[in-house]
Length: 262
Image (cartoon, rainbow, N blue to C red; front, side, top):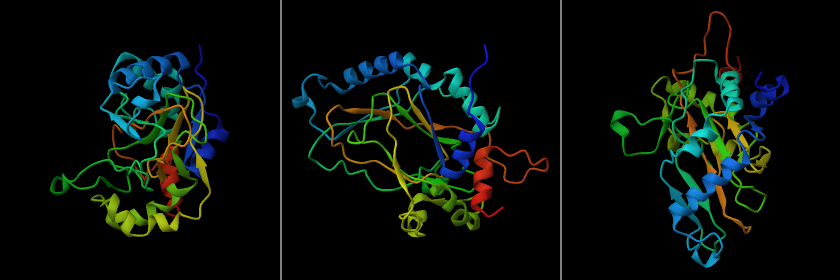
């Protein structure tokens, strides 16, 4: 049986916008199993909002079978091949940490604009994560929706096309790269403030596949049902290559080159 892959239109949207939403990337029934595990881990009662005493609860790396199933559906694996390149990524053995956001009057304290880094240099182990032009340590940013997520349910905010503003700021840093704090100091978030913003809404089982340089942010929960989402990286088997003699670049590489004006 053939696996439905991304269309040419979706790939071009990824290049231009920096993300695509894969609807029904994993079954809603699997999402429900994952939520049940999460509720048990939190110690909160899903039927008693009085037990939801924090704006966000972060669970550690979740590697139970339903989470592994969600991260490795044939449809997602096919999309990874299309965006990153066959053989250029590593299968996930867990879904990573899960921030569960609850409706709560307190500021969650983590809603700033940022990009996700992929590594820490040896002499900066305790500082912010770093990123370099070839996206060391991160092939994709991914948003797994384990609950239906509407506009008021703390969907991730995305600056459309912001991934194209990052390469020129990283180019001079070479292989060493720079910290995400230094990227902020370089004015990345001011430069992208005027870009269109979309919300990563959708149904349980949807997955947003995002360029690793995409600027995004969390937000407080203003709805009612708690929001369950995982934001794991897809790890690379090797760093991206921005000069290939055969010209066979992956869409992630093409976007980086486009951001460099190539």
